Image (tube, rainbow, N blue to C red):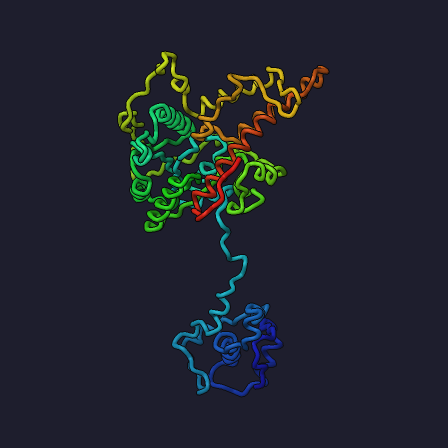
Length: 456
């Protein structure tokens, strides 16, 4: 029987007329004709090696668009080839030499999509969520992504002993006022997480050691955290990555400490201008990303491991003495009156927004720059921004809404609606803050010999 040796021609075997034609034209054999036909077709498809140009160009084009194997094909396992030119394996279903070529370029429909913060597939078994300088539940991408992508999450805050004690210059790395503010912020974050169905595990220890123990205990397969900018924080991230890699645990980073997102900058961080004027000129046309709304309910704690939340340490536990409530001049210490935490930050922001709209504008005589009234001409929200109790994007968005409502109200009443000065001043200050954080990140992650100094 003469057949086309190339398997590239589409063949359809579901027509009874074609089968009868093949049977009558083929020589008689001991085995049934239909089995002989199926055997010939299967050897062409499986055992023959297609020509390289066609197989490499379109590996799936070599297969017929329509193929119907008769039920008698199952009897082939008991047949043997009589032709000496074909060497048959023990099992006809073994893959041919052309199989690697097919697997090397799989169908795009079979490829896995990368995990996205917005995806709610709950693909991860358990995620460790490490809080650092992001002690808030609003506009927290790491928290939102961990809750959306995991079956359970374990929020963690660690007091790293390397952040306390004396520096090489003899000063406290973390003073009592800052430590008190931090302890209050951690306590407030724990209350917020508990109100949303979760909790906060608090430990004293190095992240690269404590996180490994927690990951083993609960069977975590990922660690989520926000990136920071200083050199010591970047080194901590490297240690955590190395420790988690040995455990087979993925580390996923997020960015949320600046007004502008680092991925939206119109330049690579290595090419960032070293002066504020050049930086401001390049980011003028950027849009501020929208804030991420706080979740009403957070994924629960893992059932495995039975991890205790732990007690929030005291100043004595951190090696610090209580801060004096009275300064050296006999006046009450200003820092002692500041309460840390997201709750206090949002309340301060609300009061500041009201104050912005209530106070009249006051600028320089030449009108070159405007400022606003306030407590000592300052919003005094920087401590909460530094600890991450308040998102700079959320602050910008809320004050913008307040300013727009105030301007709309004044316009309806035919009153001077020049209420944008407060926003202009705030934008100016937040841009300076972004500049210092980005320039710190630039020089802390990649030390350069003879690098140009940072200038204002």
